[in-house]
Length: 304
Length: 334
Image 1 (cartoon, rainbow over the protein chains, first blue to last red):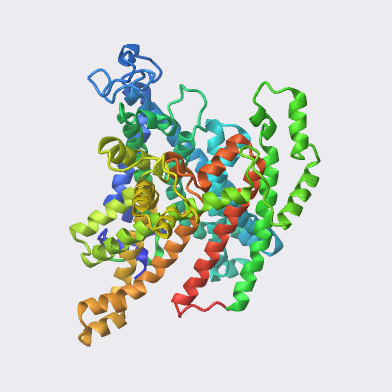
Image 2: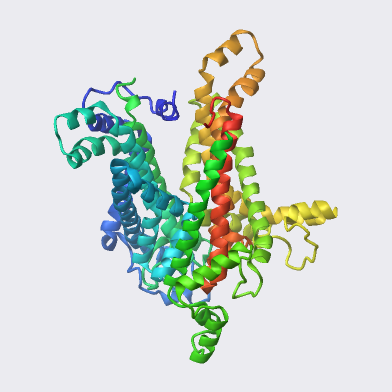
C-alpha cells in the first residue's frame, strides 16, 4: 500500500459509483469527514470576509480610548468580546475584517505562483530540449534560496506593502508548481493516447491543452490547495516581520501579531486570538488539500 | 556511484554561480543603499559619495561583480558594512548557533515523532492514532512565530521556567572555543554553562521542531503501516520471532528509510536559517542576521551570507541523496 492509500483507508470509503475522475473524486470528497471539516472552516472564513461589515460588532478602526486609558489595553469584556488592541480598537472586529486581507493575499499569491509556474512548467515539460534545461536550472537556483528569505528579499526590493507581499509569496511558489507540472507532463507525454492523437494529426498545442494538461493537472490542484495554507502562513510571517501593509488601519492577521511580544505579560490575548484565526484558516485549507489528494488518487478509484 | 557524485558536484557550480548573479542583481535593485542606511536621512551628498567610493559602489555594476568574484576566489567573503567585521568571522559565530538550533530541533522532532508515528500505526484506527493524525495536522497548520509566542508566554512569562531570548544568560562571560555552546560547556567541563545553554535552547528548538515533528510522525506512521503488510514481516512472524524483534529488526529498519529522507531534507531547510524563530527568540544565527542585513542594506553580508546559505542547502540535499543510496541497498545511482 502507498502512503496515500493507507491514509485513505482511515476515511473508510464505500464503493464509489463509476463515473469520470472528477465525479469520482467529488463523491469521495463528500464522504471524507476531514475534507468536510476543511470546507466548513474555509467556508466560515469566506462568509466572515464577505459579510464583515454586517458581522463585526465595531468598525475595525474605531478607537475606544476609554479602554486603553490605564496604559494597557483591556482584555475581553462585554463591550469588546476579544478585548481591544493597544490603540483601543476592537480585536474581534479587526480579526473579522482581517479575514478579507489574509484570505485575499493567500489566494492572489498562489494564483501568481500557479499561473507563472504552470506556464514555465508546461513549456519546459512539453517543449523539452535546451528551453527545458534553461527553465529548470533557473528554478533550481530559485529553490536554492530559502523561501522566506527570498520573499523578504523581494519585498525589500518592492518596498513593504500588501500588494508586494502577495507578489513575493507568489514568486516563491513558482518553482514548486513549475517542477510539479513538468514532471507530471513528462509522465503523461509518453502515454498511448498522446501517440494516438499525434498519429491522427492533432496539433502539438492542442494535444498539450486537451490531452496532456487535463491528465497532468490533478497533482497541481492538490498542491495549490496545500500552497494556499502555506501562503497564508508565509504572508502572516512577512506581516509579523513588519513587511506587510504599512497603513496601520489595515487589519492583516500577521501584522496584528507584530509587537504583541512586548505585551505578552499584560495582554497575551493580543497574540492568541489573531494566531488562532491563522491556525484555523490554514487548518481548513490543509484538510481540504489532504482530502483532495486522497480523492484524486487514481489508484484509489472504485475501492472499498 | 562516483560518477554520480562528480556529476552532481559539477551541477552545483552553475547553480551557485546563478545564485551569486541573482543575489548581486537583486541587491542593486534594492531601493536605497548602505550609504543611506548607515548615514541616515540627513547625510550630506559628499559623505554619501565618500562612503560609496570607499566600498567601490560608484563603479559600474559589472565591474563591481567582477571585483566581487575576484575577492571570492581568494576565499574572502568581504566585510560587513554595519559591524565592520569580516563575513567569515560573523559566519564563524552565527553558523554554529544556527546548526545547534537546527540539530536540536531535528532531534526533538525525531525523538517524539518516530515513536508517536510507530505507536499510532500499531494502534491503527484507535484513539491514539486519531490523536496523532489530528495533532500532526494542527502541527503543520501553526505558524512558527505564533507557536513561538505561545511557548514564550507559557514557559517564560507565566511559569518563568525557561529564558525566552538569547543563547546564554546576559551577564555570562564564558569562553567559546567552538561557538557551539553545548559543546563548549563540555570542553570547558562546566555543568552550569551546559545547563544554561540547554535552558536557552529548549523553547526555540521546540518551536522550530514542531513542523518537522508533524511531518516525521506522519511519514513514520504511513511507512510502518506499509511495511507491516510485507511478506518478509509475515515470514518473520510465522517463524516465531518475538514481536519486539520483528518490529525492531524488520519493520522499523525498513520503515525508517522514507523517514530518513524527510529528516535529511528538513535538516537542510532548517540549516539555512530559521528567520522567524531566530527573530522571536533573539537567537544570533544566520536567519536573523540575513534579515537584518536586508533592512540595513548590508551588501557584503547579503552577498556572502546568501551564497553560503545556498551552498549549505544544496550540499545537504546532495548528502541526503547519497546517504539514501547507502542505507537503502535497493537503490544504486549509476
